[in-house]
Length: 77
Image (cartoon, rainbow, N blue to C red):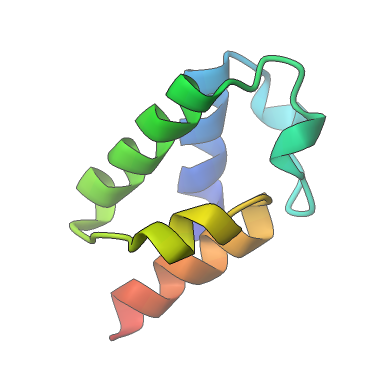
């Protein structure tokens, strides 16, 4: 469920098709990637799950898998 919602958010913010988003997606592979959109994505995720990432966590989020794992850690704690 987390991955599906993350894919929706990535799709909305980066304006790419959900079908083009795979679990192994690295953000550097998104042609539309830019830091302001990435920050918007982080904000949306934090609001969606009522969580707050640390700067260290944000710095290591370079793929959908890592982002999903970070959300899961917060949700389960």
